[in-house]
Image (tube, rainbow, N blue to C red; front, side):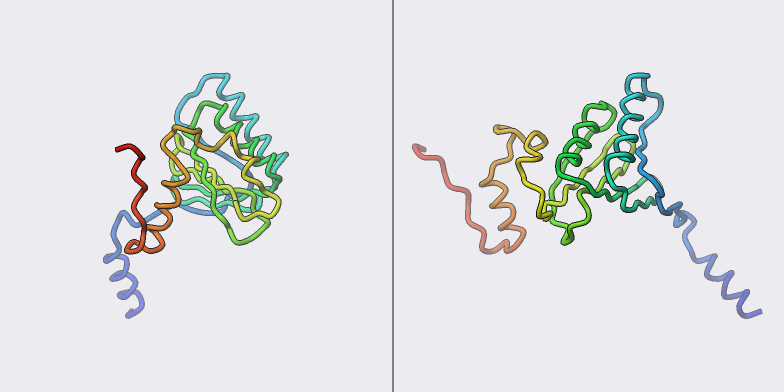
Length: 171
């Protein structure tokens, strides 16, 4: 009787909105919002076939609308996937680079809603070169400069010792 009372008490104290649906993803997949036209559907199906046939699916998981999938493959195939995601015209595609600390994973694909897909490329892979992903990098004049990146990195590492940006000459 004490066990039943304790169980009921615990259930009563849990918030009603704490439930979530989650699990493993067994094969490559990607979602999109609502109805899309026939041309977009064909591009999405081609993309999923590419993910299944050309990349190595390592693992995937989801919780509610958030999903993460890990893939292995060459830098050329990883770059092609990014291109296919952009060409599909269904999602906002964000590309990031991060060292994963291992060599198996080429990239992860995160989807936090059906209209945003984030691809994180394993920049620590020995066989990956930045030039392989050049077409997916911000272009000059797009607001991202090497100086800004270095300064932002310094501020994150040690906010008290970061140096101010150099002032333009002639001012």
